[in-house]
Amino acid sequence: MSAPMLQLQNVVVDFDGFKAINDLSLTIESGSMTVVIGPNGAGKSTMCDAIIGRVRATSGKVLFHGREIQAEAEHAIVGLGICRKFQTPGVLVALSVIDNLVIAATRDRRWWTKFGRKGEAEARARAEEILETVGLAPRRDALAGNLSHGEKQWLEIGMVVATDAELLLLDEPTAGMGAAESTQTAEIVKALVGKHAVLVIDHDIDFVAQLGGHVVVLHQGQLLREGTLADIRADEEVAAIYLGRAK
Ligand SMILES: Nc1ncnc2c1ncn2[C@@H]1O[C@H](COP(=O)(O)OP(=O)(O)O)[C@@H](O)[C@H]1O
Ligand SMILES: [Mg+2]
Image (cartoon, rainbow, N blue to C red):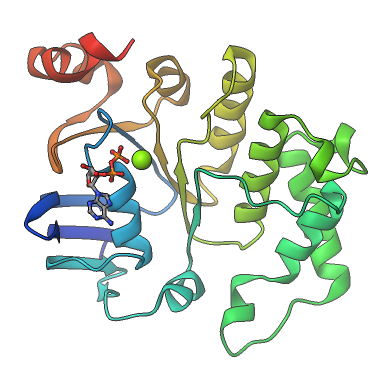
């Protein structure tokens, strides 16, 4: 039997005596969608940081295909196939949408390792494909700096997809978006599942409902519940600490 793609086992992240993550265990399978919700300060971003190697767990294990990755540098973890989109956009504003994607596709995650860069033609073809995936074909030649906030977020998602990572971590991809943009973001994210496993963090319950993935509720650094959104919504403890307050 092969190991699950990603496993957190009893992970603790202690910041000077404050446990931002407290004995968290979680399994993510290849090609799946996991949606992590929880109030501000629950530890969602710290969990991503621990997976990507930006913070080190004080104790516990982070296993990728059964292999402990915590001793690896952040760029080496990207090289293994885990890529994160940050809350703040990082597109190259002076370049067009398609050129941003070409650069991201050229900097295939193998670029970090020994295989060298992707060929120009291959990167261009991949960039055109991703342009469609993230719904930016009509904005292909626009300068990234002239995109709306939502379009920039989609471009960022595209740049993460371009790394061909097996696991994509999207931390609040709908931050600052209106309802129509959030709906389109849900469609984009759903289209990634299967080829990639996607871990999405969000606290907008309407967006979580549109995604329809496996939902994990974090509270004070611990896994409070996991299940379908219907299971989570029916849970009184979750409602008391989170859903009742959230929206
Ligand atoms: N580098 C750090 N040093 C100290 N405390 C931190 C650090 N990063 C996050 N925290 C604290 O850990 C808790 C969890 O933060 P975070 O993971 O950002 O929560 P979320 O993303 O769920 O809103 C918060 O109380 C936050 O203040
Ligand atoms: Mg956060």
